[in-house]
Figure 1 (tube, rainbow, N blue to C red):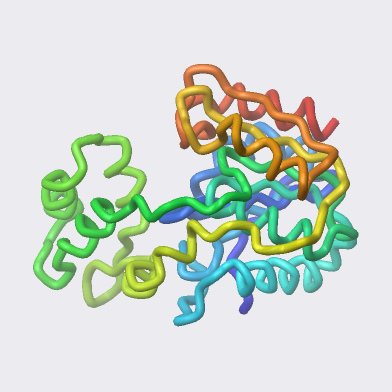
Figure 2 (figure 1 turned 90 degrees about the horizontal axis):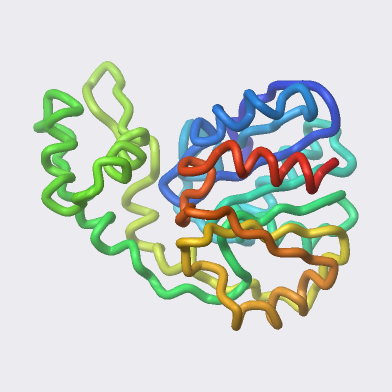
Length: 252
């Protein structure tokens, strides 16, 4: 699958993978601050953003999507960073193709299995009748019946696009809904990535826990962990300057 991506900057290639319900656009503000140091590849993973939709959606195929992209771009070794679902893709890629990754950054996710916890979001998104709404305000009003937080609704509605016939989802909502358990799958590999690895968590998030450390060590023996203070799971949106500082420190 040929993924959509945006390329900017100069220097060593840094590929960034977004999380569930996200897109490459989520990383634009951080990319602007890093483009003097790196050539950035902001990638839409399959069934998200402007990348193609597919009935097949799991980490195995997302890893191969990424390999196809970096092969076609002629990239030998990359810096690789992923957030949440993108972090799981990045971890799977690094243990499968360790020779292609120079350094790895995993943002607020661990290798373990995560129980499905997006039911309310999916119910809210699926409740929006795209053929009946006439404005984004109407979509937001409907979503507000399920999700109180304005910031989360704004993030989710970035995936609401328009064509000549009306509103459409950029995400493949039916496939994501049907296969949501795939996003929580553990890193199912005996492989190791022994290159430098940064696990970057939010201090207010519970996605990386003390009990995750043995599992992290097993797959990523050359790891370090840093926590962005006063940040939750969407640390790059909540504390972008701190994330930029950690990325620069680790990669330089």
